[in-house]
Every structure is written in C-alpha cells, then in structure tokens.
Length: 522
Image (cartoon, rainbow, N blue to C red):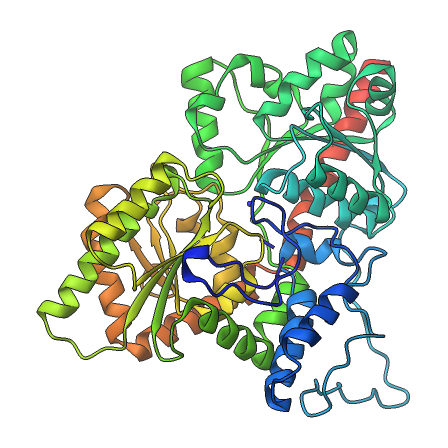
C-alpha cells in the first residue's frame, strides 16, 4: 500500500536537519536513483573532522544503516546495479560489527524452500499502471514486477499517464526497472496491442487503469480480458464509474488487499453500477526481508533511534506517538492532534508523573503548504504545543522513524485504509498500534492484543486520547502489545507469506486464461 530508509528530513522549523541526508527530491521524497555516495562521504568527513572516535563510529554506522536499511519497495530497488554501500569509502568500524552466522558443519545439507512463484519462469506478464510515481499503487506493482523477475518471468511495464515534460522520479524508477530486467514499453500504439495479445497474463493496477482497455486495445479487448488480473487498491466512492470498471465482470479475476475492501467493492458495484464482480482474491501484503532485517537488528535500531530523536530535539526517555501518512483529511492527522492535545490536558489534570509525550506527523509537505496542513499548524500554535508536535517532511524513509518512536497511530477516516502497509511495518518494529476500527486495519490489528482500536470521526477523538494516556502510563502493556504485534507479523505478514498468496492467485488466473483461449478457439 514504505518501504526506503534514508537520513531523516525534519521540518525546517526545527533547524536541525540531519547532516547525513541522502539526496531528496524537492518534495522531500527519497530520490530512488541517488548519485554516487562519494561526495556525501567527503562532506560528512569535513563536517565531522573534529568529532570524537565514538561519535564517528555512530555517524558511520548510521550512514551504512541508512543506505542499507531500506523498507519494502526501495529495498527491492537497491538490489540493482548500483551498490548503495561503496566499500572503497565506507568501512564498518571493527568495534561495531555484525556477528557472522556459525559455519555449516561438513555433510549437513541445508534445504532451501522452493520459491512459490517459480512456476512463472519464462511466462510473459504485462503490468499496466495508471501512473508511475512514489505512491502506494505503482510501487506495489513494481514490487510484483521484481518478485516475478526473481524467478525468470518476462515482465513488461506500461504507464498510462505520463507528464509531457521529463520527470526525475519517472526516469529514476524506469531505470531501476530496466536494471532489474523489466522491459518498459509504450502504453499506446500497435506495439502495446501486440504486447498485450502475446502476454500470458495482464495485470491492471487500480480501477483507473480500466480506461486503457478501450482506449488502446479497442476491438482486441475481448481477446485480452480472459487473461486480465485486476489489482484494486481504492476505497473511495468516486472510483465506481462505468468508464473505469465496465469490463470488470469479464476479467479472469480481481485481486484486493483486504476482505473488507473486497466486500465493499462487491456491494458497491452491484448496487451502484448493476454489475457483478469477477472471481475476487484477497491478498494481504507482507514485509520484505530487508525491512525485517532492520527491524530485528538491535544495533541498527538503537543508532537510528538516537539519531532521529537528536534531530527532533527530544530525549531518549520521551514518549513519541507518530502518524506516518501523506497529510490529508482522510488520513486523520487533524483528529489525531485533537486527541493528542486532549491527552496532554488529561495528564496535566490528573498530575500524572510521566516522561514528556510528543506527537510526530510524518508526511508533511513544506513546499506545498496545503490548506489542510495550514489548519494543522494553526491548531498547534493556538494550543501552544509547538514544543510537543513535530512535523516531518514526506518521505519513503520510514524505517528510521519506526526505530525512533514508541507508538504508531493509524488514524485513517471514513472507510479506513484498503490495507495500510505502514501498520505491519510498525508491528515489525514491535510497536503497538492505535488505529481506527475501519478498513484493512481491522484485519491487521487485534484489538487489545497487538494494539487498541477507536471509532472513526470526531467520536473517536476522546477514545484515542484515552488510549494515548493508557499506553503512556502502562509501560509493560505497551511493550507487550508491541511484542505480540511482532509475533503476528512473523506468522502472517512476511514476504514469503505474500508470495504464497499471490502465487495461488496467479495459478488460478493462468488456468482460466488457458481455458478461455481454448473455448474461443473451439
């Protein structure tokens, strides 16, 4: 639905942006194809030439962790031809080194589980995305592309909507795909038609991509529909238009990220559009191996925690409650800040002896300063809690923040998140989750076991405030919820779980497409 770790990019008003920041786009997002790291290293060397050896150790380790500890999507990107760690420059200090696993005894055979997607070897798959950006849908499709390439699938990629002018993000992501063997082709013209006709499987990503069928394939649409898998991530009503989804009943299947979203689509398409959903498969997402390595690395987490907290100006013992989403009304940052202010009042009235608590809003956009974000900042100023609320510019680099905070708040409103990948990423870091009882969050968070749920809307503000106080005052409960969340991730939300779920879907869809082709031939 990150992930992705770079140095932190705090809001300028804190005046302490990290000196080890990896190059960011103007929006604050991580540029996924960074230039060579040597200038970065030289700059760090100049800036820290007077630092003590322990400080240098910490800075160097942080730089390595930041470049290697990338979450879900960027982690996949990092496997391409560009090595994010230039070993001719960076040397891990001897005193801070990872322990190598013990050698395998002679004669012992280590069995490696077969890749569940291995049956896709030599198959031809076309992936069609409505756009190519750093948002959730396109990045998830790229993740699927890399999983398929890993087993030898011939993968083609088409982007429907592209700006007329050159775009750095698109160029960078296309380069990453090319480095991994994904063939980026035009989404229009006879070449696009031929690619679709020759593919064993066509994956349409998001409801919006449906318009591509008639616009490009035209009279060839009936030949392609039986081998289309439609991957849907949307939960908003304005996507239910016949222009988008009129061919939905005729495709081989629909893949959706949560059961609640699948049920919503089933009901809405029938009631609003009078069409029937095809065979629908629910595929929960999973955390990458790279993310889990960072989440389970005590040294890396400690260094990231210290660095982020230093950059935010908070102490190690302070309690940090963070909401990590793009800043918009639907993500509920306003209601979170109201609840946070209410929790501060409660703590003061009850004279509770607690470490200072802070609210971290990751997903801000300093360059845009939308009306909604201005409202958030004005609220903080009016309540005089500027020292307790920290706005952090939007970034894919969530791993450092997950290592630094104590509780994740997932406060998406209305129907909630389709899935909410940040939730399982936070649970991997043993963080309890305070979430709305809506959408995919209800399929991830077990209320009272791995986190605490509250209602959406204004009715959920006071319950969320109470839950903030509960976790601030009950350390043992906070830690227990986090540990159980981690166990749930290990049981259900890892990369190999996701790969197994997707493989089951692809097998069925391929079988249907073969049957459809045979029927048409007869």
